[in-house]
Image 1 (cartoon, rainbow, N blue to C red):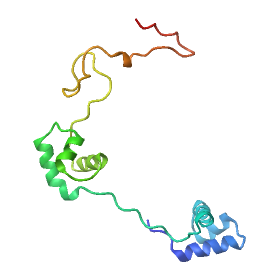
Image 2 (spheres, rainbow, N blue to C red):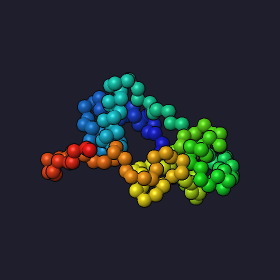
Image 3 (cartoon, one colour):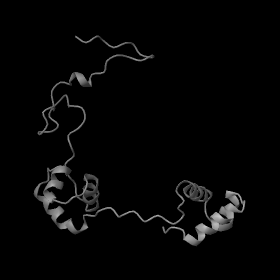
Image 4 (spheres, rainbow, N blue to C red):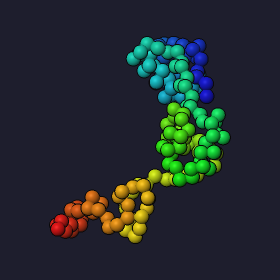
Length: 152
């Protein structure tokens, strides 16, 4: 969507200065009332009425798609962080994830959450498997439950 022209902005503000209500100005110029209010506020606070510069586009990994496919095929168990370091491009993990999803690839999920009671969840983490740790044991109570057991 393109920004409204400077000419339209000046006409809207001129109508507001003549005493027309925000609703009347918005209806007359076919813009939203909230845009008129924001324009008036911006002029009051900063003195600017011109459109702002467009934001820079997000970095894309389209030029690196083939290399990314090769890395995922060669290292199917690599996490996003590991793929990012192997790719050698200065982008965020979210950008890499969007590129991987766009290419229809799947990658290993990170080990997170509660340790499993029945077996290992991840071979790289030292806090996997075994009985649940104390930090995950709920203690205490609330106004509608009985108080928890005292720790041993």
